[in-house]
Image (cartoon, one colour):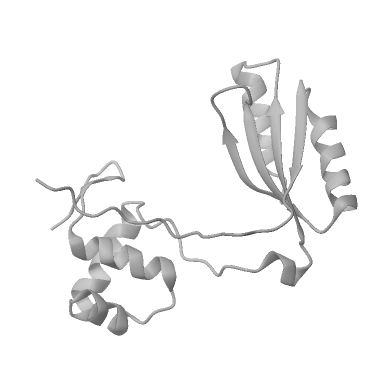
Length: 167
C-alpha cells in the first residue's frame, strides 16, 4: 500500500496507484466502475485511492483538454527572457505580472544562459505583437527572444508513471 505523507507528497505508491494515475491521465472521465475494473479493485477502494492521491497533491486537478487551433489560437511562441535584475522584489513583480497574462500557458525559471522561458499561445502574429509590447512595457528586461512553432509534432499532458523501484 502506498504511503502519503502529511506534507502533501508521497513516500511510496504501489503498482495499483500507478495504474490509476496512468489510466486517469488518458481519460479522467472514465467511470469509477471501469477504472476499478481496469486496475483490479472494487469501486470503493479505487475511489478512496483517488481521493488520497488528490488530497496529497499527486493529482492536482482534472480538466478538459482543448485543441487551441479549434478555438482560434493557432500560434505557439516560446519566449526566452534574460534579465539584468535577479533580486527578490524584481522576481516577485515579474512572476506576478507574467502569471496574470492569459496567453502564457507555461512559465519556467531556467538554469543556464536564459533566465526564464514562457510558452505563449495566441491567435496570430498581431496578437503576439500586442502580448510582446505588454510584456516589455511592464518590467525592465535585458533580452527577449521569440521562437515560433511551425508545427506541433507531439503534445501530451500525460506523464509516464515510473514503475515501482526494484528492491
